[in-house]
Image (cartoon, rainbow, N blue to C red):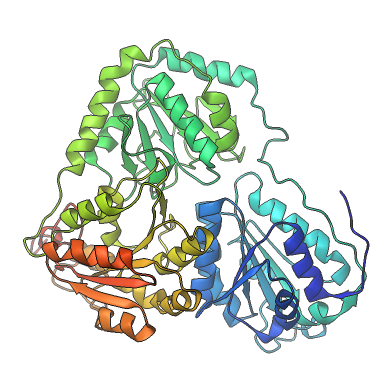
Length: 566
């Protein structure tokens, strides 16, 4: 580990110098008095973009989206107590979505700790179950090492968020500590190779399988890893499904892509997984959503059990076998596995062609069907959007039933990215779009958000205006928290409560922020509105007036109501 000569600096300067030396180029923040020395040091670090946000919720989501898109951590910088609590949702998102992220929190003075001082929270304890690691600095001399470890840990193995609490007196104190040069992060394994015996066992299983499926998900997918897993699937004739909101790992227009194992997955796809004889899961934990409530695979493997044998590839050695029995476990990150797997060639690939073609046919048939409406047909709206977006566009989605439309009817992969909260957190899409446009300003960025999610972080339009970031925001306005309304109608028909929304005029609201805004109530009005939004020089918003009956892509609201007197 190389070190630079120590100089007398404030703790805040040490932090910023450490960020600079480790390649951190973006800080999303809501300013606070507890970290003024860091802000002052950032004034002298113009190579680090400092983006002031309107709420810590938005700042944390921007940081998560930046890491998900680029594979590199950005910093979310917030103050103690309320600021940290507001940012916690983004940390939870990064943890469950396996996204590299740093959260730096200004903390009360060290002498005040443990006295319930103003806005004091035991931050390391608070974030321990939410983050990959959480710690509190106690000495300024430890700051370079703590920052170096934080950057490395955020990226290593299964990526995730690292939280550091920084007492304000420590940040103001002067120290002569030396900097630490950047450390390699790497994946979980000590080197970049996989035991050849494991890959040979995988090849033999591929040779024996007549109905294999490849399921990809999780974090840590580089562009090269995406290309390598595509080569592996193509060479071996493997139909490929992506997990929830991970559509962009594999090109959706490829004949081997067969859909998403997410919320509201195609029944044909779920059935096909059950009839497969080999399931190769790469990167995904096969959690509740991907496994359709832990039903896709047997929880206990016994003689004569139905369901596919599982090959589970994951960077955390403790994950395979934790929920589902595995026939073969491979500890590797997606990039390492895909680089090795692309060289495998099964002798059985050609004989599986009918199996792969049938799976693709199921996907295409499912994509061709949806609930429609004469006034505003969202399936047609998505078709127009899909055709208009460049191949390298970035689409962000929020949480909610509305997201089924872009997720089911837009095409991803092959350069087009999808950013969405796999943990189902609302308020994601608008901040994520801002982060994406900041990170990749020459790419088209469109946010898809429900009226509920927009109500949480839509004020970050002001941040987009301040940075002159030309994002397009599509607000799906049906006047309700649609997901919860659907659950209410299933469980307690006719007894809906607390799910109706009183919404503003979104076009006028956008105009108030200085953005362009339009309202679309009919299908034929969407294409020209989209063209104007995409051609604009700044942020644009289109409010889609959605019929409340179109509650999901597969059912009307009236279809969900349980029979009376059940």
